[in-house]
Length: 350
Ligand code: SAH
Image 1 (tube, rainbow, N blue to C red):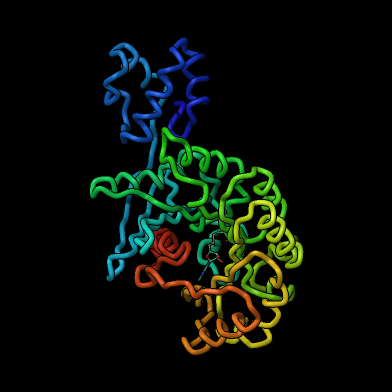
Image 2 (tube, rainbow, N blue to C red; image 1 turned 135 degrees about the vertical axis):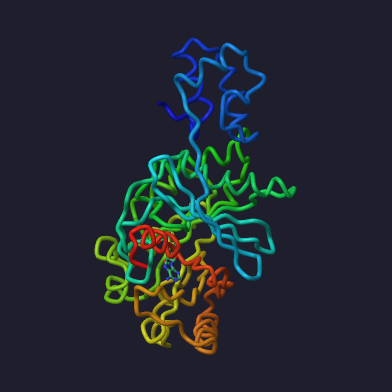
């Protein structure tokens, strides 16, 4: 069955055209699916009865089902394990921030990048998510918030997966989220986080959209970065930073560099110096993230004093930097942790 959830209006028009259904019906169907939470054609009461009866024989509307939910003790972070029709599960996180509701979206089930500190990649990548599946993640949260008179305000593609390895679906998803008939979200409210896929960054730059780019750096030397992030062997540090610089200059958007702090690994004065000289002169800021230790790995976070010292050193070198507000570590909100637990439990070895 042809699942139409996640199609844009022009795509729906083409589907309708093939069935000799007037094109304007596409807009109505989109409105029902994306703004009015319809998950059946029966609910689309402004379509003629005959059409409502025909549509389910050719199309399905397949969204996501929530199989587990965790809420942090402070109530600010909620994490959902969503399941798609083929049984594949992903994590989606809602963060209630002072500036609004932010959703952290997964772009792949699992991840192939192999970063040493990340739980998402432990089982490799299962598959890319479709445009409709990513939309189902955000709409699931948005519909829940709508009940309380709220909505999703911002979105970060920082869940499991490498967005640039699923480029076409990700871009179609962002265009859909931006569309008036869907969430009408400004591109400025959207952040894509990448492990540094240089051609992907270049492609995104050429789209000419004011999307915020975030690059996971985590080390300021090639030797260490290659150890932490194997993708560095393909796209080394200098190329990644050059791509970030070009993106910032072209889009006039400040690029964020994420830097996980791992005790005794990348948190010394020398590291801060190297990081500063790498980013000097760029429209950039550094987001320091004390590592969320994953039990499958042996990394520890530095003390608060050491984190603050690292921050102060960057500031001394005139690099704009912040320490990420910690959210949801009591509910295993670090990438991929929840899904792994679920996989382990279903496999019966937890
Ligand atoms: N693949 C993309 C997006 C997903 S990861 C990327 O690499 O950017 C989102 C962010 O979470 C990345 O910066 C990643 O490095 C970070 N992350 C992964 N595991 C983490 C952990 N254990 N503690 C803190 N941050 C982590």
